[in-house]
Amino acid sequence: MQKMTRIGQCLALGGLIWRGIGLLQAAEALPAMDRASAHWLPQTAPACTVRLFGPTRFAAGGEGHRMDSQPLAFDYQLPAGCGTHWSRVVLTLDYSVPAGRQFDRTASLWLDGVNLFMGTTEEPGATRAPSWSVSRDLTDYQIMFLKAGHGRYALNNWVDQRYTSPIEVSARLAFYKASEPTASTVRRVPSAVMPMSVDPLGQAFTLQTGDAQLVRRVVFPRNTEAVFVDVLAQSQSNDEQWYNCVPDRIVDQTRNYALEAPTSGMPFQQCAGSAFRMVEALVDGQPAGLAPVTPWTFTGGVDPYLWRPTPDIQTLDFRPYRIDLSAFAGLLDDGRPHQLALRVLGSNHYFSIAGNVLIYTDARVSGLHGGLLLNTLATRKLQPVVTLAMQPRSDGDAVGRALVEGDFAYTQRGYLDTPEGRRVTEVKSRVSLRNDQHFTRPRPGQFRQLIEQQGHAELSGTVTLGADLLYSYRYTRDDPLHLDILRSILPDSSFTTDIHIRRGLEVDFALRRPGRKSFRSQLANGLQSQALTHWKPGGNGIIESRGQQGRQWLNYRDSQGGCMRRSVVSRDGRVQQVRQDASCIDLDVSNRTYYRPDGSPAYP
Image (cartoon, rainbow, N blue to C red):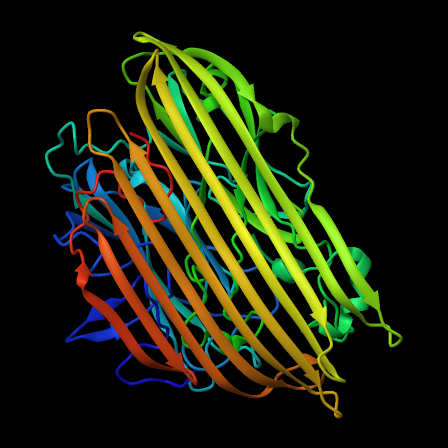
């Protein structure tokens, strides 16, 4: 992407940041609406702002592939006069990278072991110096900010003669005052937030295989009534583009379809292990929940020119998936240590994973008693179905189809005996993944890999007291992926790739409470991009790229009047058009009781 004078170097939809007189600096097309955006942040000034660190340059001298940088440590203290209850708590990070060469680096922010942010950085270019901001709604985590704490920010960025660009970062928290609470506007937040990090200051955990687990022992409050886990699973190394991995049996037959080698100097090869990845949560060794793995593509992934100037959905700011473990509350409030674990089914070198435990308590009582009545997930075999229809060719290659499917539904039911009577929580969920890959040879020297993937998740919860409904919610999510790669090998062993990609994220969330207004939000975030790129032999560098075209769009609407419709079109690395529907802008979300930008379940 070429450097632009009036428009920032990294364009987004969900987080457009307006500075000066209509100048646009962008971040990436995030499906959440809580970015540093005049459209989606509270319009009143924050009660106070706390700078966590920065601006800080991350430019340790060393070989660019090193992975042993030291995190930046900082202390947190809430200033006097900030209050103790807020309608919004917003974390904002500002980034800038000078022109040069650098990897897309993974970054993470932690406070007392709790993960507050994880994402990747934008790659610069010889004449491209990207800058962007990301913001995260941390209102559900506000209990953490009442006390002093110790934090760390990890960004493994190394500078040498080849990878020349430092990365400058700053981070701050903004606290927005709550209006006078009423029965219809009060928003419950967790009574406690506990980290699953094994490091007391916080660190993502590496899962090399599908059997490896992140394990944390937790003593829950005796009056626990609901439990959720926010989980992030980032694919790395061999698993980075896990959605184009193939079953082990056809790795050799599909080498010429691959875009890279597993390690420098080795022959090209598709990643192995098939394209099935899914997160599983366990309670005391018992399967307790599932979460989809989002097919994020970083700005150096597949073809860097696909993402200039508009990165993939959520690439710069990963969003966690919230697993509901509330049916287990009756087992967890006995005052004894309980083991929580996370793993990534299908992981094949490797995934970085982080998790936070959100706990809601009943302040009226010192203790609750209950139990688990049903958990059908405990007996499910979480194995995908693999269907291969490959036809070997005389030259050692193959054409055909590789289909991988996993579709798992479960129901959980638990109870708590409260002063008002027996309270029953029922959680139903379904998480599925279908990855369908087709391999064809259109012409001699050409290899086409077409991937059609559909990820789907459903989650619903119903809480009753005797025969009375207390509340119910329903959450659905779809994240389709279409990736069409045509690789043409030239006589000098260089090759071209003609790549077309479509991605989407659609979220529908509904909440019902008898006697109060129901709430519903719908989000649709989509992306299309294409690029024709000429690669050096062995994929060791790009000769040229042309034909880049991209389009992203975001539509959001909720039952409390929230509305946003925005789109952006790019060509040849430059922004061509930005559209905002003037009839669909809501400038104040500060009083949205059940506002959940990512559609995650709200707890009344």
